[in-house]
Length: 276
Image 1 (tube, rainbow, N blue to C red):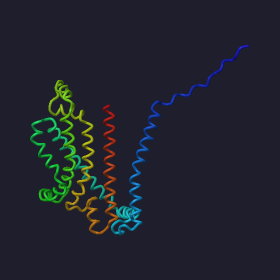
Image 2 (image 1 turned 45 degrees about the vertical axis):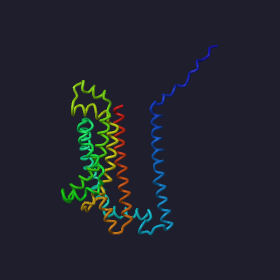
Image 3 (image 1 turned 90 degrees about the vertical axis):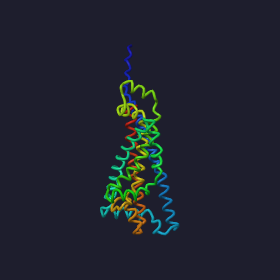
């Protein structure tokens, strides 16, 4: 008697090898995002508890709901996005100008020891000047238009980029420089094709610091005879006693700073992943 062969069930196609690591990466990012919300939620709860305990008068520290109402009021009048757009424009222009100058001078100082000896002490001394100390001079030299505001933001962006680029280039492996020169790379070509790629991680970190510094210098910049912007909103709300709007402006500055840093971090991750 013959036995019929047993047919095994067709094997299911193997799951893509990348699906499990991808799911794991998404889960890890969600966990990190959730953990990052713990401190803001704790601060919000503390804020509400302090208000409920009447530690401060409502004029000194309004409840969170009053800040939400102030947000609704400014949105209804169409003012908030106008202030946000003007401040963002100033930060972006100043960041580009200051970062470009920092890359140029930092590259020069990092590549040339004589230039480093000549310029580095002066630049480091200028770096110690507080942002508000520049305001009177910029008013005298550049007037009360947009130019002094953008220049002050550019000053804030310049120093982190200059410092990181100069330090990174000064510590590039000399073997990279020898190889670049062996292939005929000198001057700007050596900088662009060998040195900056070798110093990419610290340069990108310097750009993120420069963006954060740009938002810090923005408020000082908008003290210069401004009639719009989040810095102006802060000062105007102080003069009118609107503490809820002051807190709203501070929260908007924090959110915009975090958003811009997140975008730069994503660009940094993609750039470094593309090089690996």
